[in-house]
Length: 640
Image (cartoon, rainbow, N blue to C red; front, side, top):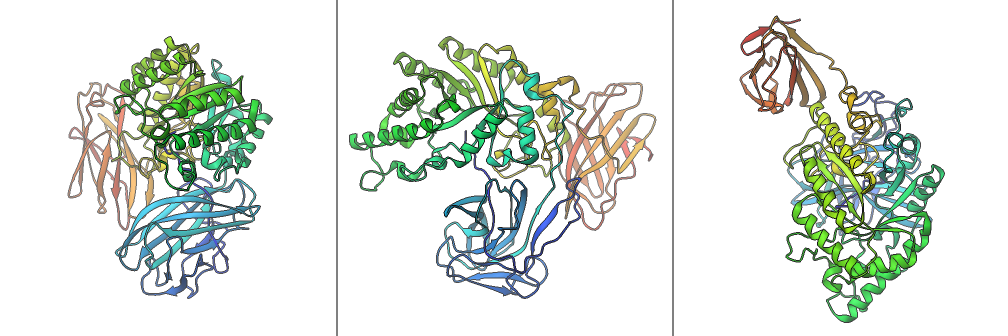
């Protein structure tokens, strides 16, 4: 897949003054988050945080995010030096924690990241919770991410480090919390039972095997794809040193629940350790015959080590991943693999895997294969390889798509293009983003976008089922919306691309696969905080999410007159200084207290009794009362 970076473990050194709080009030989830760590640095101590190296930590009143105190970190001489908090004994396995810290520099600028170190059997692993985030001395920056401990550890810490400089830091207002799991729904059909034409799988992290996540995985899916646990950096971080614990746990789970396992991936240009591309003297490889031979030998040893370890337990492999670059005249990605070996790394990978696993299905996998230029370059490569006798059994289409792209016709053309080659086809990494561009961001997924996700799943699964003689497996890239790579790629924002929501409950997207007639039945009914009716119109207004200084809302308009509307304009007044900042489902503007919303091109026609709506983001200070009156095309809708 494309740069799928997982969130992970947490903190280092002593919870002495970190507070353990039984329950924190919150609006976000029904159960309410439980806070397990709070560090405000208001008591004159370092709150249990300790240095990671030779730097000095002290209580400071120079600057503070909240209150008067913060943690000062001075004397750093290496980028990895920074404040560390020990959470061993605080974190429970299988619980998904949200970690939030506020950071700023004392001087200058840099980037900071929030990471974790965990150790098992004396072996350290480093996991990134929040990636590099711009940092200055002029403002506090919030680093927030999530982590689930999936394995037994003897050491577990959370820490902050910088990307390049050694500047002094300040840390403040740290919170770590979790929301108790909601039991999964056991009274709904299992996806794997409804979709009988081919196996339906999910790509997972080790945490998905535990608790309610594990129950959801077992109930609905025929197969499992280890999202990261079989990649080169996870399985052979140092030459000849193999690690299989995470992937072994997934294979064991799959066996216990009658599920298949897809292997992903043996060769990729990403997540490959640097040592792989160093020559015999430890220097970066150049394209020489000696380096080509060395690199292909390392590739062969890696495949024999990994594929040989699993044998028949993993009967399907993405042997090579993302080797096409349609911008190149020959269509081949200029990876280090290609620069040093040409196409021989692909030939070697398939040949060796076939020798190790003579009965396995071997796939070449890529993204954007519904784009004609890329599709055709991949087709040409597969045709070439098969003509040479290279054992390519199938083509994997990742299908990372969004609510507006691609069309069903484009996807059908993708499938039919490869039929003449006589290869199997699988959908290997499907998800449907609510976003259509990098400039969009919603604090919570709007209801209309969630419906569009459902319709996209409906249409694409219907297509896959029509081509069941060609499509032999469909895998979604994630179990539920609480753990999706799209929350951080291509930009950081909350996405909702999967069949189940952040509480593991079935979404409209689930019904789009299982029973499209029920799309719309899982969207919560509006809870009005303000409303109005009249002879010609009915309006429901609700706040769907609120945070300090901002909120998200929506309005539902119903034409209660006997005449159809060909366009509409909705108006109301914000009476407490609220300011509209973004709107979808129409075009919005605000003048003083007056908000005006006009229909979009696609929802202007409103038949008698029909409804439509718009969603918006706005700011607030002090109070946030609902509007008491609305007008539709100049007609008053008096307060109900």
